[in-house]
Image (tube, rainbow, N blue to C red):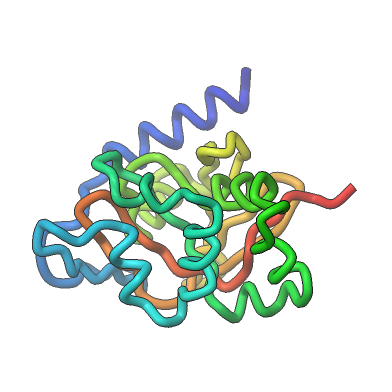
Length: 188
C-alpha cells in the first residue's frame, strides 16, 4: 500500500512539472536535456543517432522492443552506455543470445518509465519531495531517483545503481537519459 502511494505521489509530482519545450536546451542544477525533435524524432531514432548507445540499440533490436520506441506512447529510457554493457563482461554478450530474449526483455523493461521525464523534471521532483522519488518501471520494478551532489542517481530496489551521464535527448515520444550502469535485479 505504501509503495503504491509513493509511486502515485512520485508520478503526480513528476507529471505536475513543466515538460521540455519544443526547442533549445534547458538547464537546472547542471542537468541538461537537448531537444532535437523536429516533430519526427522517435526514441528509436534518438538511440540510433547516439554512438555511445550502440549496444543498447542492439539489445532493443534483439528483444524486439523497437516498435514500442517508435510508437506514439511516451516513455523515458534509462539508457546504459556502451561502457555500461562492457562492464558486464561476458554476461553482456550472453544477454544478446536468442535463448536469453526473455531475460533481456525483462532487464530492458526495467529501464523504461512511462511518460516524458527529463533530468530537470526529476531533479525538481526530488527537491519538491525533500528527498528521493520512487517510480515503477514498465517491468514493475521500483526505481528510486536521488541526488548525490550535483549528480542524479537511480537505484533499482535491492539491485544496481546508476548515475545519469551525458546529455539527455528529448524526442516526440519521450526522453533518452544516458546512464553509466546497466540496472540489474539482485542475483539469487
